[in-house]
Figure 1 (cartoon, rainbow, N blue to C red):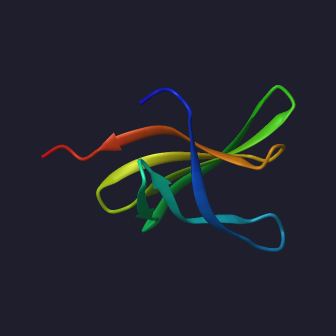
Figure 2: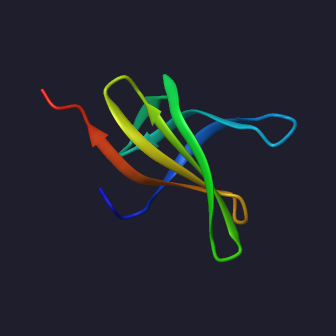
Length: 82
């Protein structure tokens, strides 16, 4: 998956700017975040983005939080191979 897909995410916003995604919806299915395997920040122009590599126990997803418009998108999906 290479296109950005807008998604709904439930996250905890803690003091100090820490954001922790807890679950997200994709194709009307709720995915519980079991683990965040990697986190990084970057920018597109003047827009700061927060990237989270998360797993629901079945696949690895890249969730991206746009700190300017406060939206979430799914930027990548890597499913487990049987």
